[in-house]
Amino acid sequence: MIKPIQSFEEYTATYASSISDPEAYWASQADQFVWKKKWTKTLEWNFTEPSVKWFLNGKLNITENILDRHLKVSPDKVALYWEANNPDEQGKAISYKELYEQVCLFAGVLRSKGIKKGDRVCIYMPMIPELTIAVLACARIGAIHSVIFAGFSASAVADRVNDAQAVAVITSDGSYRGTKSIGVKSLIDEALQTCASVKTVVVAKRTGDAVEMLSGRDYWWEEEIKKATPVYEAEEMDAEDPLFILYTSGSTGKPKGVVHSIGGYMVYTAFSFANVFQYKEGDIYFCTADIGWITGHSYLVYGPLLQGATQIMFEGVPTFPDAGRFWNIIDKYKVTHFYTAPTAIRSLMSFGNEVVEKYSLKSLKVLGSVGEPINEEAWHWYNEFIGKKNCPIVDTWWQTETGGILISPLAGITPLIPSYATLPLPGVQPVLVDANGMVLEGNNVEGNLCMKFPWPSIIRTTYGDHERCKQTYFSTYPNLYFTGDGCKRDENGYYRIIGRVDDVINVSGHRFGTAEIENAINEQADVIESAIVGYPHEIKGQGIYAYVICDKTDKSEDQLRKEILESVVKMIGPIAKPDKIQIVPGLPKTRSGKIMRRILRKIAEGELNSLGDTSTLLDPGVVEEIKKGAL
Ligand code: WTA
Image 1 (cartoon, rainbow, N blue to C red):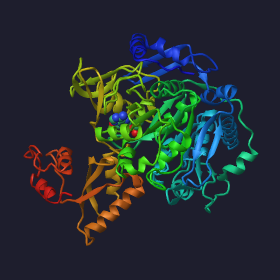
Image 2 (cartoon, protein in one colour):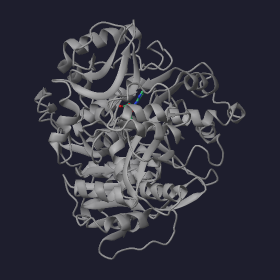
Image 3 (cartoon, protein in one colour):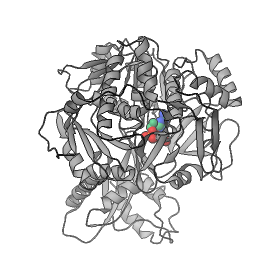
Image 4 (cartoon, rainbow, N blue to C red):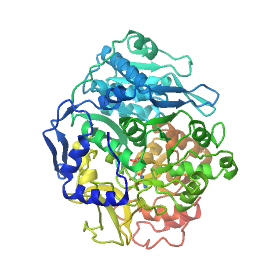
């Protein structure tokens, strides 16, 4: 297991040596795991193709490091405390031994359905233990999992299933979220009408609601595991075999399937979990992310379980039965480590301090933040009312593509500055570049954040389209990985993330491309054209502002807005619904037809008097019209 750094002096020394000899450093970390066959070469890389390979010819199975390894030393230790949506429902405590047995059994189910190494399996489930089991069962037999957040629409699911050519889908009958019960299987049925590659659907029972089961395709989880032969012998995988695909939005086109490979992802998620959170034996860790996003993959499934941690998995929402639910869970399980998103903090903050003051929260030792810049107000509230000024806050910067946390304080070790992600982890080499790609040396500089050297869990490719990976991340600046974020390095060399510099909007910590939402809006029959921009939103971080040109119609603007929202829900899901929709007569375009988003952003921000030069527009008059109708 990874032994975390103990002091700031050790961090500084380790950082220096990790940069002077990265291969030796990462080999020493990788040595802490169980390999079926040791690697023959630590690293081979270039950022032009790009091609990055870590631990070449190493053979392993990641689940042996999560399950078999801990089974030997601490079989009865709790791996997962599962807390149901409804606090009155009995939760579950699942030990490492039980998790091992369940994963081996479900891996047997997958095998019995003919699913084998390299096949893609899509998982669309609520936050129930079967989700973690399904993910690990795929890894056990070498199938590539593609977890899709269970808030995406049927159409979005179908796109992802088809892109990956998944052979199976694992789902549940329904799900509970707050007061709602949602039909999950029915959504999968709708999605699969256009997915010919899927031959098997396994359905876990959660709500007991009636669902349709297609004979020869659909099977109940509970019945299948009774018949299955457990897979005790984990499949031998190459370090560079893909572990999973996770779809994420970029500035252009449809979401792309980010591919992570086994060896590097294993080493880096365990390493970063151990160092950033400083988890110690006996601690109870609670990450509120959904497994449908990268945070759930790296810091709810792989990282903590690789390190043999005990953690909470929560099915519900932070505001049910009331806005004290997280605090209630913290007291109930004596949580020591709490990792959440700024949007959740801001939202819970808005319910007032009385809600928090009912709870003791004294078990807490470390707080974490992820997904978007944390504003100072939220940082201070988190520090005072949740951490009682006694818990370091780790503001962890990373991305789906980075696989793990790259820039973050190490809890209790790195000096903190509110809203700063502070310093890179060992082996991580950030650089800031200006618009021309010139590297900005020294401190007190601001530019676009890039990485000049690979770390083990860097994106390997975008599924089925390597060129897209190259264009998106490795072509803007030669020989650098470009993150899409703007960043400042202060006079002491500490990093502060400013936000996206591309057409990606971060809504409540979820990424959307403007083009993706525009396409969904344009599906509404009356819409001619649309443009999306982000604007500051008190709770969500960024809200979505839509400018839409419609055809002549008898429909009222309210009716049009309603239909546009329906279209977005149908194409993507409720999480991508615009907060504001302004029907406009035209859009500000340059003579070459490019939409001037800068102007639209200013209007969305309410800065109507600082639009800059509009004289180069094709029709400057349109800006006045938009200003008049601004929401
Ligand atoms: C943003 C989430 C500021 C950033 C793990 C990044 C952050 C995008 C932080 C990735 C942070 C994430 N401070 N911004 N601590 N963490 N971001 O792929 O813009 O969903 O590029 O990964 O979220 O979002 P993703």
